[in-house]
Image (cartoon, rainbow, N blue to C red; front, side, top):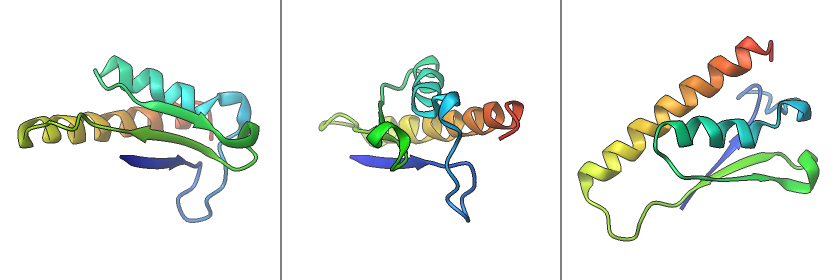
Length: 87
């Protein structure tokens, strides 16, 4: 299992504005790419926004590469969406 915290700035760990609903936005982008992930907002965003990735227990190296490539693309699209929203 892999957990990612979604932040507006990697260095300062500034949070993404709550009204953008970052976990749901990232989940939607990932689903468009064929990835099923779990989104989470801890304490209504007071403690951050998270996504969790849990690949199947039986998985090939090729499938792991597909998941990693899809996740990288989802992160690129998510970053672009945040920039479009001026975050």
